Length: 493
Image 1 (cartoon, rainbow, N blue to C red):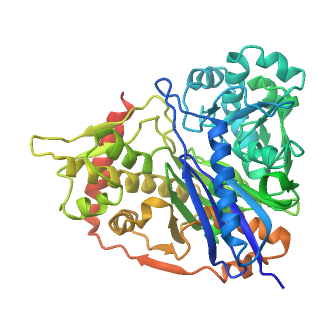
Image 2 (cartoon, one colour):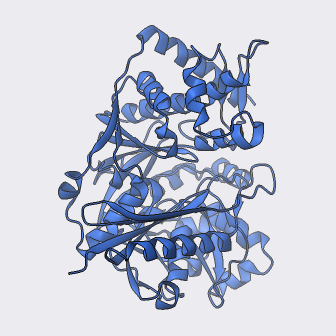
Image 3 (spheres, one colour):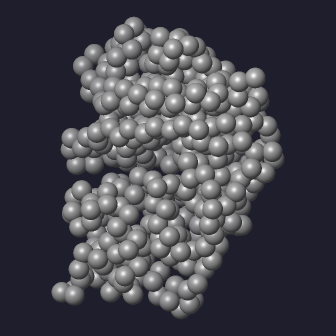
């Protein structure tokens, strides 16, 4: 019998990946391709949907061809950068404009006006989210209002909206399926997470016509088939989840207090809360963790907008490092930053501050400051921001039991050890670092009968390394006090 394989498409903010796993969770094939970023104005971030599509198709074909020398791919799972908005023509499949990326802040004024109009609490109650340009709804409305003729076409049912998963699903199925899953729907500010439906009141508030919306489905189930003309034969698509929910599944964080932190372009900390939607008192997000067999599990989440992107800035903007890996040696070679703090609010600050107007700052510099101190301060900032999120999670009544980390940044041992020291919490790093793809593969494989229950899947999780706190309490207290002062300066403008 041919070995069944599962292919995961992991469409991220800066690159697209395809990874194929066997039933024992061995990676048998993988491919990755970066695509261009566009910054057309201050606070604006865009992607070319065609560049995303071509990169996804290329890596999917490459991984599929490599993998099927050893088995047969029986299901595809999709995971994606969340909140990013694409609107396309239902007849041609062509996008009407560039995608507006989750980092984009162009609709900050619109969100502020809605907040000033007294709508913030209603939005939070219905969606679990804050009124912020991070989420999809205001981005959709912006496209409909600024692309000539778009609103008229949308009202006539000729346009389709989707987060990246929906756009890829449409393309893979040749327009036969316009759908998303509950995790992605829950990030739009249009989906009522209590009643599990698109909310007519929210659609009216954000001025988004329901004719553009995809169908919302379980995270594991039938999403149609990828076309034979694209992949050589029809392949069932059986799982979809937003990247952070997929990473939590890949890290086997299924119980309250089990926390995962993913360090990619941004950093996202998520802990399940079970069937209960926790209403955060500390500006965290209540969101759908997964929906399986019609049953919804929720999560608390904190979002840091800039993590790995700040290291990319060190490399491509300041040009003080040649590669991201160089930061480990540089940071380890210093006793401290000499009092330098970097607040990476390049596109505003996320949780728990939620200030789109904050801007990046470097404080504490003297004539003795060198690029090395700035490099180390950049890494330390990620750890301090994580500390703020875990404090908020605990204040909301979910006590951290353990932290599992993933993402490109945590290959840096110095960073993870400093994180353990600042959090005063043991940290585990998994053997399979591609946890986002792993979560998508699990969902698809579960629906296809390749993988079993959460318990069976959890039994396969293995640790690659662990990090134990080793910092004097008074030093931790001093460092965090300096961070709070730096945050106050960033928020002051």
